[in-house]
Length: 134
Length: 134
Image (tube, rainbow over the protein chains, first blue to last red):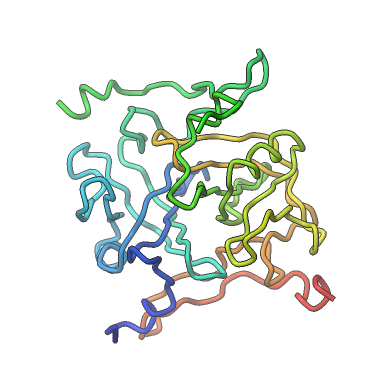
């Protein structure tokens, strides 16, 4: 397949045509989420400076914030050494990236104490999901 | 399949038995790399407090640093809302996570100026790879 953009050829999309994409908060450095992009999502992200992902569950482009209002303004797009992962530096609208109403999707921490080892929710819900998705 | 650890059941490994794992520097917040873990790698990471991944190219456990000396001491293991991505907070030995000798694997930035749009290497090589892998 010939692409119109040489820079897209350097991205190694997987067998599903997707590349893993990390969103990191531009100001705090907090890792907000991991999602997936196809070539169209990546092109649109570059063009619009708004994060656009590919929803694997809905099998369609996912313009982050289109339902929640919690869009991500993109400052910087990075590619890793293998070309199969992308890192976005973003400003997170509303300070909430997660559909659970938390700042970051990575809100569960693995704890061995108290036993047994478990994932503990360690970050607050900032806004109730029922308010985000009425 | 019955697992011996309930906490492992909450991790949604993909069809290849892997989960995407982000390593973030504990001190600077810099995102260092994205790699993959299977259940064994995750258990060993917890047990040893050293990052252990699954090498997809070599199809074997990859104890980070076993060849390069650039191991990662793990402070914190997080799971995301979907259960299909992990975030490690690490101290990176030698300050080099990337096999290219750079601090982070995400050293290429997408730039539109000068045209055409291209990935520009924007981070220095700290140590020549030939010295890392003699």
